[in-house]
Every structure is written in C-alpha cells, then in structure tokens.
Image (cartoon, rainbow, N blue to C red; front, side, top):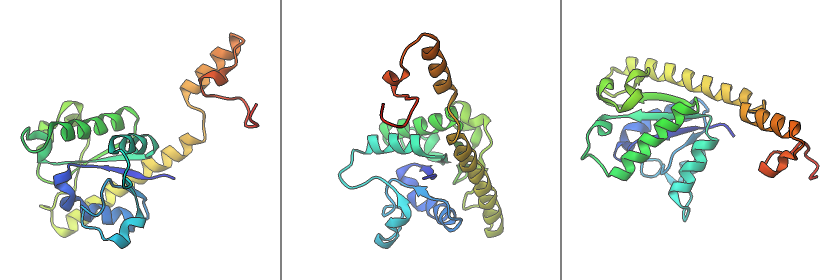
Length: 195
C-alpha cells in the first residue's frame, strides 16, 4: 500500500489536522502515529495507518518510514526551539526528515511562520511549502493543493520504482552470479518457487 508518512512534533497535532484532512479527501492514505491526539474520532481510525496499541513505537515508526512512498515533514518553530520539546522527540523528527531526504521520499512544509533559514542542516536549502494558518483561506487551499500534487508525484514515482529491481539488488545479483555464489544467502532469490 502506498501512503504518506506525516512527520511532525507531537505538540503540533492540532495544526496538522486540516492538512491531514485534505490528504484524506484527496484519497491519499496517511500514516499518522496517533490520530486521536490530532482530534480525529474513533470512527476515523480506519482511515489511517498508525501505531497499534501495545506496539513498540520506535519499531512501528521505522517500519512505516521504510514502507512509506512519501515522508511529509511538517516543520514548525519547535524545530528551532531547543527547549520546546524533548531531545528524543526532536532527534526522531530530524531523523525522519534526514531519512526522507536520503531515500528521495521527502516533501517538506511549514505549518507556522518558522523561518526556513533557521531549520537544521540541509533542510533550510530545500523547497518548503508554506501551509501555515497565517495564510488566507484561498492561499492555504492553493498551497495545500500544490503540496498534494508533489506528494502524489512521490507516490507515483515510488509505485513505478517498486516494479524495478533496486541498483543494490542488481549489483548483488551480478556479483554473486560472477563469483558462482547463490545470492539467496543475503535475502535475494532468483526464483519464487521456494528453492
């Protein structure tokens, strides 16, 4: 299943709700760690991929990041305010953004008036959509529509890439073939018949 992973500070859950609703209205599946905390109802839970009760949240987040077609990082002033929230949460947020950038899955937006030049690392040099609530309703709707187009493009690119063997898989297969080895020892098999 192709979905967008929504990365945000826990304190920003109320600010991301409108954006998440727009994604759902555009029929884009969403992974959100805790939809209830973002103001969604029990009846809405079926719309989300999320952390399940009793699951270890770090493992669930890692799995979701790998499986996501797109990682939407919602930047806010909390990213540049050291005392705003716990160091562990901040590191997780920054790691999610870094993973998305490295994997080519990153789409970034700012949900408040954070100065993009103050964002950490290479983030400040990337295009960041403005979907802050300081925009007029029309400006916000247009910005969200453009953001959704960018997300759909990432999802479509991921779908077409999933149909192709990765560069690393091709390299490993070629290497093991030329060395006369069976490449199944590292998780790749030449057949699907269980041999």
